[in-house]
Image (cartoon, rainbow, N blue to C red; front, side, top):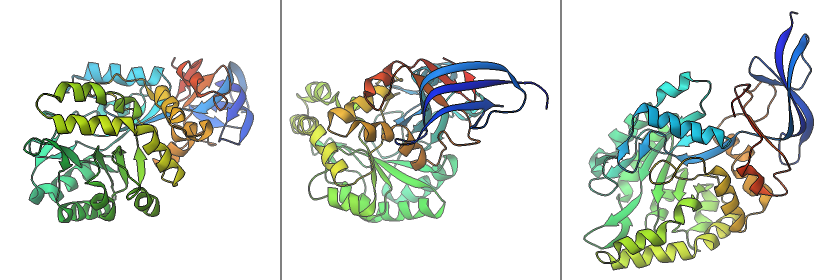
Length: 363
């Protein structure tokens, strides 16, 4: 066999929370745990190694006003990459970012198509805005356009009511979720409040974003059905400012948002304690900057989730949930190297020593 350039990664390879190896090799962009023949042109990287972090709720190609040009979307993706987030679930975007799939220097993206919202019940320029009779057709459209996910807006402020309320009647979400599942897609929904959750879960939804409205009544239902949540605590931290901004026009909504914020950590810890799958997501790309996956892991720890489980929520477990490999034999070499053990202190995630994507050191 002819001589080949390879990357030798050594130190402590965290294949899983309890599975640690001493080294791996990268040949032709893929992982091997056997030294390759002809491996003479070797570049070495050393440290504590994790699979690339996962941000399971972000928006590439989106800012506070809507779709952005490709060069801005590129900067968003590069910001995530350089922070170690190498697998992104894009939880709704009006931009077509398929061009990133041809770039081996950008994170891999699992797309949920474009948000689907009720007419005049979401941020202008973000979503398809439809009425219940059209929901199934739009879900089918986005199921075909996405990468196995569809994103609904489950609740939003009702200006006549002056507070958050559910966007869809029960029958409409039942039919829509059934259609998505028939087409092989999973369904998630933006939900801040309490009153949309039971209908969505009993209709068969697979995941809920934010989930600040979970209560003692609905947490057992989520656990029983295996419905995951992506709490986006770094985004929920903005609720007090949002509430202040809406106080004069919508005082009931503002008070509601403050209550949801105040109990956010208790809500997440109660969900975790009940056995609900919890995953890392930041909601970056609307009003928040990209590159916050490490901060979200730290927020989960602050909420009371044990550090190793919070780490898994943004690495091993999240990759399994999204159907993507970790540090497996033959998998693409997407990994991050740290100076110390992230299981002992998740704050190390904010300071990657090296980022390796498709076998190349990119940061």
